[in-house]
Length: 177
Image 1 (tube, rainbow, N blue to C red):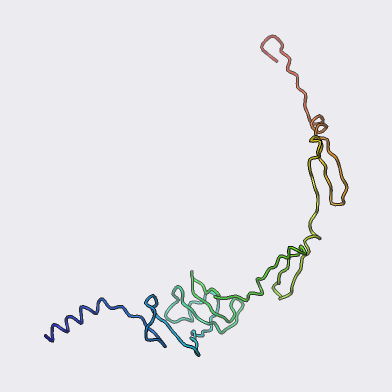
Image 2 (cartoon, rainbow, N blue to C red):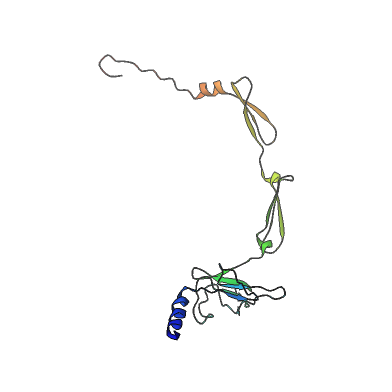
């Protein structure tokens, strides 16, 4: 009976799946690790990366999705969360103000923050050239208004007459023209 019990425990062990829970007795079955706390956080390993392609700091080798907190500053990398993907360290979060762009449709202005942190405002009305080309009610003339407000009427029939080529074919009677 004792041997049968050991055999039953050994065989049933192949069907058991376990999740690890820290701070919880019942981890979610869809997770491998669940951490619960109301007054503590998770400390991600802090490492001094040398560059975005650093493959020497992590001693066991870089593996896809490895997460670290970089504590060093170099020409290509600054402190922050990084994950390893496609042979380089990718910054997890960036400083949003460096990438904020606004379009003010009421005032017709484009605003962005440059690499020095300065707010740059571009008034689109200073850049645009307002012109208009439209068909008149008579259906035979176009009206063009340039950026200075000067109106020019264009007679379509006159344009056709100016660029029309009249061609006459003469039959020489001998099969040539």
